[in-house]
Length: 335
Image (cartoon, rainbow, N blue to C red; front, side):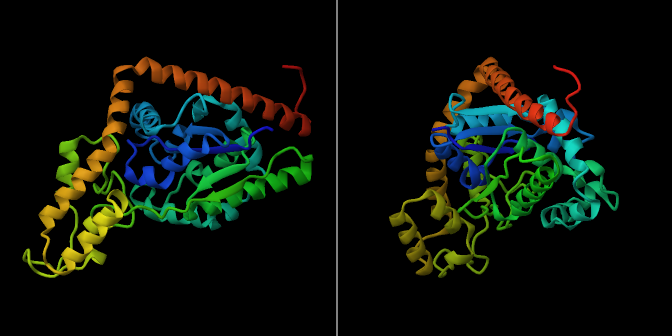
């Protein structure tokens, strides 16, 4: 039987961090054996709020792909491709834009939240490209006939927008497009080292998959702990300590129990606790760093993977576009 198609991806605005790992990358590695997976490097979407810094986007395309490969995403099982190299997606975006009103885009909860977060970029003048990126995302998914889209809860409104576009298109032109379903991630967003609900480059609170041992040690030593604990033998509260929070991600159940008990009893100092955490994080990241180093030393392999993946994705998009144009009576000549 044919495998169901999954479409997912990331914006190439920086290297990927442990939030990405626990939030999506781990799951993608598992899913690639069960489904036909497409992962797009969303450079066009990255330009919606980095339009004045194209070099940043271009530079990070390869960085993101090396992170994919280093965690176990297999190009023999998963098609990795560059969004901007699929012109059919841009064409679909134009057609879909006729099916969505401005007011509907402005009501999208995810878009509203992101616009508020990017006030320093847009001020009061949001670009057409940023407001309309859910339409482009609908084109990304449907061009490859995506049936399942893994997302976090905050991204659900974007998938619902795609479903609305598909229903509207099919109601006018016939049952051509597949209506995708969201696959909700069971992993909550990973907090930053400073306790912020979001981990990110701009906040300076992230541990990257490519960070070396020394960098990890330094970052962990600066992590937020219980502010009420002044002296080493003061009883601590693990529930408000980011070091304890990360122990739950990187340490064994026995270690976590010991850390919590000794912290509450004032028998374990924060420095010792941080050193143990850093050791565990580095142990997990070591094979990822080693694999990444291989691809850093062989960039031609990364380029080949991208070139072959993009070619495959485009062929799939061409098939979809042929059906779409026929349904829309735009198939004037045989191409």
